[in-house]
Amino acid sequence: MAIRPKWYALGNLGSNIFSQAFATFALFFYIDHLRAPLGAITAAMAVQSVWHAVLNPAIGQWSDRTRTRFGRRIPYIAGLSLPVGILFFFLWHPVVSHQWLPAYFLFIVMFFDLTYLTVVLNWTSLFPEMFRSVQQRTRAQFPRQVVGVIALLIGVAAPPLLYGHLGWTAMGFILGTIGTAGFFLSLFGSHEEPTIASLPHWSLWESPRILRQEQGFRQFLAMNFLVQLTLGLVPAVLPFYAKYVLHLSHSMLSLVLASIFVTAMILILPWTRVVRKIGSHQSIRWTIGWIAAGLLPLLWAHGPLIVLVSAVFLGSGLAGFLTLADVLMAEIIDYDARQTGRRREGIFYGINGFILRLGVSVQALLLYIVLHSTGYHANAHGYASISVQAGFRALISGIPLVFLALAFWTIYRFSVPESVVEAPESLTV
Image (cartoon, rainbow, N blue to C red):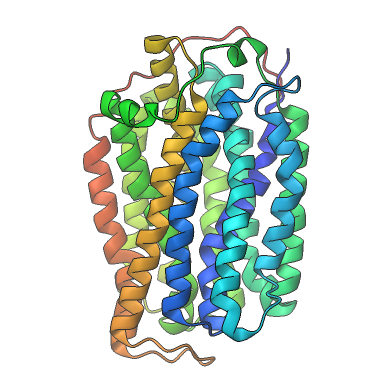
């Protein structure tokens, strides 16, 4: 059966718009705009992070064990895409008084996580099933990641313009509509292989054994956790950094964010060629280096020009990471399948999601410690003491650079072989 990567790729609209808008602006919206208590909101974010982490392997097992005449992944995508969009809208449109904001925030994000994670994990798990060779995967990654970068651009660069001119409620409605449409449209390019659904399934209790046995998977998890923590922390801090350190306007903040993702979109195709030429293992090390080069100038930047240069380097590294993350994960799943005779996409993505989501707790804890210890106070004029500004510089550059150094060291000798076997399915763009 012909597989159409362009249609499947549209799922990245929902995946990236929802996740990046939440990661970049949720704390800024509730803490700086709504003036909700710093400690209560960051505590709610930490609780939500643990909830999300626990959900990942549980949903992964449930998905892998599902048997319906429509498949094991597609019914979840079709049934829960609309609830995800509705919950996303109400995240930006609180319907409670100020004193109940922390409880409201926790309630909404927990249900949003449940629906969002179910849709995204099932959509993502289709990738290694539908595209079975490194050639197919790098080819399919191009439209997927082009859409992904466009979604990042919409989810991260557009919000300052939207909430600056139309308000936060309108922003939530517009982004929620686009993201939900992306999930539904991805179904036109999704296909499940019946023989894979009939393979032996696994138990949730296999997760610790997989972690013990799979050295390459542990290496990938550590690297992915540190890089994703960096890529989550930087945009979450950037609105604060732009307002209180650089005093940038909403339009300039959008331009900086857009520079990152436009650069990434331009460089995705060159990165796919680099991966084919030098391999995924060497390419991921170069990717980490480019991200680090983009973060270093933010330690001393005092104007938009240096920040724009940094944005270009960050976009270069982001393009590489977007191209490589799922390719590396697919190689791990292929290697496991050769060893066990089972396709266990759900558990691998579930464990990965569990580990990654713990990074949000680390992010919330770092934000609370730095803002609380430096004496941060929300204000409309962007006034901040020297200590507060130094704290934001540490959060956006110093601490992430340490994470990236550890990530490079972790993945330096990746032990999983690269996929080379061609698959028989036809692939039409």
